[in-house]
Structures are given as structure tokens and as C-alpha cells.
Length: 126
Picture 1 (cartoon, rainbow, N blue to C red):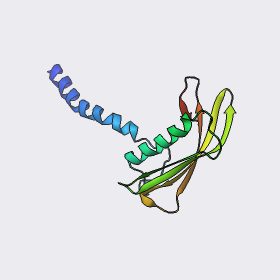
Picture 2 (picture 1 turned 60 degrees about the vertical axis):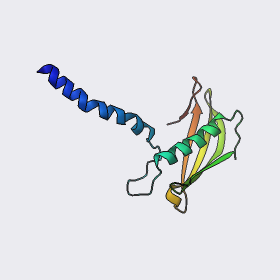
Picture 3 (picture 1 turned 180 degrees about the horizontal axis):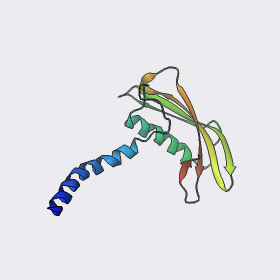
């Protein structure tokens, strides 16, 4: 009986565990409301690829920019470096995001600071 209940719970949990990985990929640090136009998971992938491109540049300079667009959703954006500096021992830069979810005008503007950690990963500075 106990084994049957455990098996039943595992059967219910496994499909939920499979959904957890895609949900993590959809985490959005831009935080708009559900009733607003927002970016799809494909849009977010393009956006974060744009960020990764700038973060990977060895000597990124103020004004460096990367644009992206998704013909499927009509969303687009531009990521631009607005400041380059050191925070303690970490190289950092500020990025300005101009986002147009589903073609929305004017674009939504977001500013975020990215710093390179000791292990070589770029992370949003809180």
C-alpha cells in the first residue's frame, strides 16, 4: 500500500519536474505586469544572446550596441553599453535595454549592471 502511494506520487511529480526546466529559462528580470505586452521565451533568448554578445567582448566600450528582432512575434530591442567600470576586483558595465514587445512604441527602457565574477561568469549586480 505504501509503495503504491509512493509510486502514484512519483507518477504525478515526474511530468511537473519536466516542466520546471523550461520555466527557469523563462525567468524575466524586467518584471512587467501580466496585462502588459511582454516578450515570449524566444524573444528573451534573443535578448539574452544580445547581452551575452556584449558581455563576451574583451574590451567593450561605451556605445557598443547589439540589436535583435523576432519576426514571429514582432518584438525587437537594442542593448547598449552606457558605462564601463570596476566594482572592487570585478569588471562591470551598465547596459541599457530598449525593448519593443510585440512592436510596442515607444520602447520600454531598462538599465541593468552586469559584473564578471571571479569564476568568469557575467551576472546581474543586485
